[in-house]
Image (cartoon, rainbow over all chains, first blue to last red):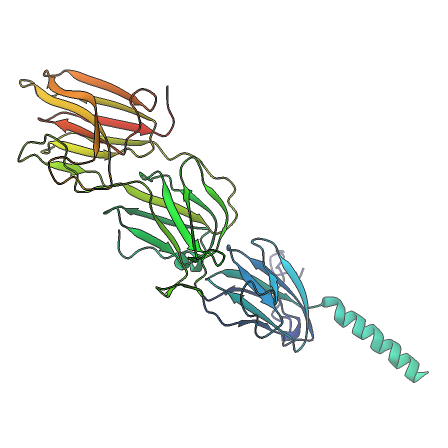
Length: 133
Length: 255
C-alpha cells in the first residue's frame, strides 16, 4: 500500500472500471401477470448466458422457449417449483417465455460464461500459431 | 367485511411469504377472495371462526369448483392455484380462491327471555386466515388463547364468540358495595334461521343460571367441551356494574 506523510498507510482507491455489458451479471426479480398470454422473461442479447430461475411464490408458472406456451397445464414448457432453482444455458438470439395464471415472483440471475473467453482465446492462439507456422 | 379487502397479489408484490386475511365478520354471508396461489391454508392465530370453507377453480369438476374446509385441527397443505385466467361457468367470473366462514354467525341474535329495553353487545368474530405463498416450515394447529375483560358497562348481555373452543375460565365479581347484581351464562349454537319471532331455532344451554350475586362476591366457572359442550358463542347476562368479568378461552382442553 502506498505510504502517506506521517507514516500512515493509505488504502487503495476502489476500482472504477466495471465489467463490460457482455460480462456483467444481471440480477432481477420478475413478477408475472395474471393474463392468458405468454410473456417474455429473458431476451438473450449476449453470446451465451447461464440463466437461473427461482420461483419464490406458489405458482404455477410455466417457462419455455416457445412464444406461445398455451396454458400453464399445456406442457409446452417446464413448471417451476417453489424455491427450486432451474438453470438454463441460453444461446444468443434465444428467448425465454413465461406463463402464469396469477401474480408470482421469479428471481432471475443472468450470468456470463467466464470460461468462454478463455476457451475462445486459447482457440484463437492455437489457430494463429497454426496459421503462422 | 373490512374495506378495502386485502389483496393477495399485493402480498406477492410486497415480497411477503404469506397472504394474511384478517377482518371482522359482519354477516354470515361474507365471502372473501384471493387472486394468488398458495402452498397451504391455515387458520390465523387471531381467528374466532374455527371452520373456514374454501373453494377453488377445478377444471375436473362439472361445476368447475371444488370446496374444502380447514380448521385449527386440520390445515390444508398443497398447492391451491388461483387460476385468474379461467372463468367460472355461468357467472363468467375470473378464477379466484374463495373463503367464507363455515360456522354460523347471527348478528341479530337476541337472547331468549330478554326484557324489553335490554341491550345486547356483540364481540364481532374475527376471520383470520393465512395463505402460504412459500412452503411453510410448520403449520401451528391451535389458535392463540383469547382473553376478554369487561369492567364498566351499560349493557345487559355480552355475546362472545366461542367457535371450536374447548376450554374457558370465567370469573365475575360484583364490585357494587351495596347492591347485588344478576349474573348468568348460557351457551348458544346458532341455527340457520335468524332469531326473530317468538320461537327462534337457536339452541341455548344454561351454564350458570341467572341469579343474584352479593356485593363483593365472585362466581368462577370453568367450561370444558367434555362437561358443558361446544358452543358458537357464550352469552353473559349482567345487571350492574362495576363488575369485572374475565373470560379466558383456549383451543386446548385444560381438563
